[in-house]
Amino acid sequence: MSMRELVRQLIEIVESGREAVYCRLVETRGSTPQKAGACMLVLADGSQAGTLGGGCVEAEVKRQALARLAKGQASVERFSLDHDYGWDDGLICGGRMHVLVQPVRSPSELAYFRALDELLSAGATCQEAIVFDSNAATGCRAPACWLFDEHDRQVAASCGAPEIAPAAVVDGLLDLHDRPRIRAAHGIAWLPQLPRCRLLIVGGGHVGLAVAKWASELDFRVWVLDDRAEFVSAERFPSAERRICGPIGRTLADLEITPDTYAIIVTRGHNHDEEALRHLAERGARYVGMIGSRRKIKLIFDDLLDQGVSAETLARVYAPLGIDIGSQTVAEIAVSIVAELVAHRNRHGEVPGRPAAVDVAQCD
Image (tube, rainbow, N blue to C red; front, side, top):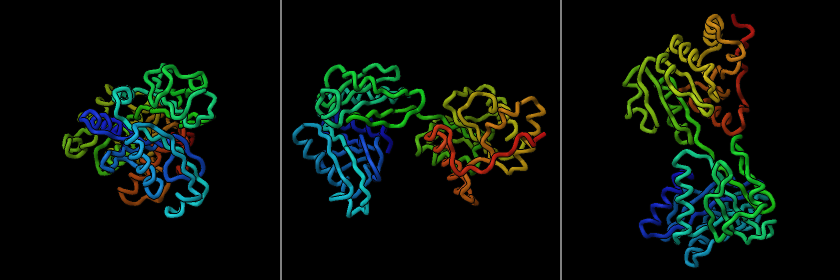
């Protein structure tokens, strides 16, 4: 369950008159079952949604959450995975975790999560700053938490934090335009909440269908396009945000392509693939990939070079599509493609394990 879904569920629980504890992993060192940013809800009856990795640590977090719910006070719990919380899980490797355990009962605490939900629902970029160590250069006791929008404007505060965030917190805010990773320093954690990237799947066949299922689970906003209505039906793609039916070339020409768009071309034939690439290659998408054999890709590149598409543009196309895992089945091909998309998104365009690209210089 994604963080967005957990926040929405938390609000619904508290608005219905029940109580819940929002637990989030704010800092880790070494080997841990989850990394900073993981979150979990614990309800008064002991049930939960989300996970911090399972095992002894998660059980202890739940125990602490229920104890804090009774007191109505937030806390930061520290766990070392080379002692009491490592043996049963086989995690004797020196890992450390700081977990913010935050009961949500009061209107002020709920207001924080409503503000966060509003930003997330609008697809906005934002970040949380959390003091998890009272020795931080903030003058604040841990925990303390603030929410900032994409312009570094403070939106809300919780966990008894001062109304205005101290300079040490503000000065460390992340540059959200570069899709940064979570950072922790001097007892403060900065947790970015980045907008989901759109994944445009051109072709609703077997591979497109398999990719869509995985990509939706991995926090992509899936759009699918095909010229056959039965291949973009709601029954076939229930998790897709948009299902578009129309002639591939003409439809793509009119479709908005943003710098956060990922596009993969997995149509049923050579001609459709070429037409799709012609309309996508120079549109400024973050990523464009095309499935196919090296021979087919070279033929398509040759044609597009003749039509005036630059060699530099084609060199940026990810083709063949997917990292090299020796894929044979449709499911394996889909895994290789989605793994490439996640790596590209999370590693600033670096994709380990890619096969050698088709050399555009040898085309045409």
